[in-house]
Image (cartoon, rainbow, N blue to C red; front, side, top):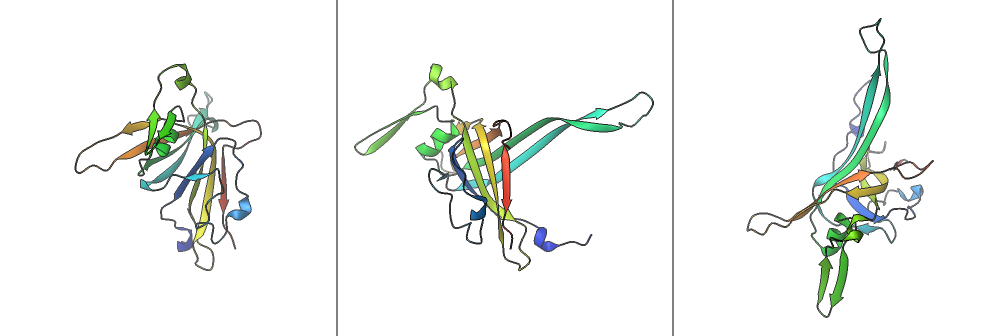
Length: 196
């Protein structure tokens, strides 16, 4: 097979979140201007990221063996782990709340907002989120860039919040969202690629 440079992909993504179970944008919204058109409310843009957004799908295969043959004769998938990782560069309280799986309590007054992190029984009940990753896919045959959207339907973040205060370290929220089973007949991740 000859190399097709139009299938090579590089570039940043936009990352959105909403509560798990939120109505998803229609597949048909992945259009030439889809990059400029965010998903409708309540989907919310996290804003800037630092170091990219990575979607990982990791399968575990268990070999099938028999005594009479030295090589494995086949394999079956016995495990599946998926995760989304990024560093949220915009260190807002709203982003911190989502990074902490919405176990936080927010408040406000005249000229200020607050965020509290509880440590009681309610903190053991995180709220699942859904993510939309709007990135790039293989180019169209016209040479125009094409949008690839990934809808990740149910995640929890293994948060690592480190607020470093010095003169050379940019703060960020390091996020590793694990993907979870959604329900019978519902796929955990849905990809949509723009076509001509």
